[in-house]
Length: 607
Ligand code: ADP
Ligand code: ZN
Image (cartoon, rainbow, N blue to C red; front, side, top):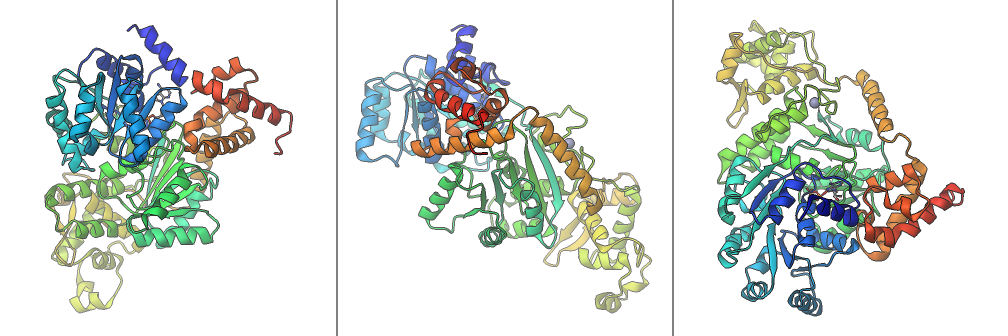
């Protein structure tokens, strides 16, 4: 197959003009009949890597996917592009299932989506052996590994593919893979000398901001939402009760949203998820139970109202924002209490050590003032080349560093030593502030040389410094009473051999600047785009999606609508030039949208 044919297919079916990093390589490897492991970030365009070769190969590709809702979305999406695809899973009725099987037998399908449980059934294996399977794909392949963060027992059986289909290639795809996970995937699937493609895990279109949680997290959340009341967003909470509380309060404040967590009845959960997917509600408040099945590509922000338990989780949850490649924002509101809550929840788990080290890395991310993109990329064992990412609170200059980090660090650590490493963070803060509390009098700590050593600072400031020193591993909390003690590197700091990185707490006065920068950035993104027309097109998309019973992004992505609102195509030929418009969509939606644009330009659409 020539490069130009591949490109023609890309443009004809997907309406795209070029490939993203590693897509072409992965496609080539599949077409050349070589096993592959491809790691691309969320939104990196993994589906295309196997859908395109499936389309141009003889026979039918089999895609193993962990979630029914994911399968359904992808199949709907493919059908909408004019590609024959179906799924086989427990959601089908008997009649539909029989029909799908008939189409498999009569070679009427290009792609078949299967759950891992189904694949393991004898009749299904026999069926697949009797037809021409072009290749197998394992989507979300990290689920196969204990080292991953979504281990699925059913994925363990997938080794059976190579045993049963000796000459058919297997291609694994995932977004998160540390080296251990990569190794595990290759071994468990018995991939044969696979080509391994590892894209950058970085998500340059996401802007990360990490802030200590105030006593009033609702205010912090509302601050973010009210800047963009129309945009779709997800708010993640740690506990179900937090979901209920935040969801209710936001609704009271007029920010329409739905809750989502494992404690809700199945039917309600599904209803809420569907309402979000079909764009009838812009906002969902959820525990991490939400999202595996969410393919909605135009999520403009993700707020974490509490700290997740690992960078892997954080990356996956924030990864749901901005899958369409347009700018999106991620806010994380954390507190030291989150760390302790997780530590408590993990206390009885079998791989406690691994989980605690993941938790520490997460906390370190929160309290360590450095480029957030760099931290995340380095965490996944990759290099980050840029000096300034231009899209995190640190690089945007929203984080101010303190002037004498070593001196401040030494003051705090020596106070911990003077108190004989027997007191917690609150008490140490009181001593440094010089606050004569009952406890301080009882222990006679007003006589310590460190008493009042930082009296000119606020307690919030001191406490923030303490938390950063913990997060960066100079101090640790010990035992039931969470007493602070020095670590090995803490002793080095005391001797002045290492210097901590300490940021000032965010000052409110700076918020205005931050807001201004954010606005400027957004404006440059939308240069030339008629935003009113964009809203009109968005409403049209919702109508069409509702008629067809599919999520809105399946009709067109935000990026496509934005391009229409920029170029305002007036003919079907011009329409075909719009980003993301392939032949099938041109035919199905061209006239409708052109009409809509014409009406709008003639001032007829009532805005
Ligand atoms: P992943 O599965 O890796 O998270 P998807 O396959 O869902 O990502 O792709 C994310 C979005 O990017 C989809 O809307 C997809 O159609 C789009 N996309 C993929 N490849 C390209 C490309 N080469 N050019 C433009 N858009 C693309
Ligand atoms: Zn940065």
